[in-house]
Image (cartoon, one colour):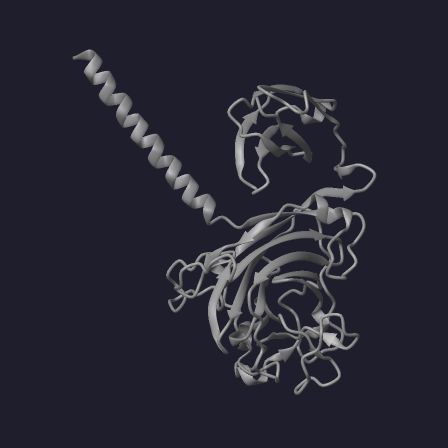
Length: 374
């Protein structure tokens, strides 16, 4: 009887653990809390994305269907992005696979959400509130950026031009104090965009000025905010995919939550944005990842088979949290250390490349290692 009771209790605990794991996995699947590192050298906006800072920033994915549609096939749409920052600008590198670009509406303010475009939702002060238009217009920005380039010399009737044309521009639209979409604001001066094409893959490189809710659409002297370490902003991306002359799919970084037409849809309220945190780690070619104070992480062996030894040479890094993250951004192992040394069992990890992340109140340091095949 005792053994039977033990088995029942063990089974119950196992079921509970599995349930908690599923809940945790579901929550994490819908978590869009991106941590962006500061870059010592700003990237050149050329649509190439070959700067050092981009090689160190982490990819995150645009994979949540929003229009009550199923997620399209990856050959039809696939998206991912990275973010870095400086004190004056926010930078985004985005890769989009789209089998067909459509932009039939010549005037940038003509039903702009129906054509292929990317939407960037930025809530500078991370406050749950309305933001669509009228008195709430600038409590957050919802930048709609055209995927197709047009002639910048003719705003309302510009011809489609190639991405590398000297007159190419990707128009930026958002509603202002007037809620009539036909009179949406031209915000081309808020964002610098360059897109390059390789087959059906489009590489977007963008530079954003960040404005607060005191933005005045009639003023020519609005000043972008200065970005600082540990600043948290509301943030989301959505891509409008037009294959047939109107939007066929809308895929984003935040799930629909069945509230697209409900009380708090994300395009009208900031409540369901994800978050963007500006981390104080500096991406530097001289030290790769640098914080103050700068720790040096020694890991051995690398590649590792069963055990990974981790040593920190700075006493400020005692009581650190250690994570091992795969290249999809998923945490596969987590450990809390009480001193400057840790020994991790990595025998169950699949062979491949991983990122070791060590963090505490002093900052964060990242280092790559390889799990070798047995």
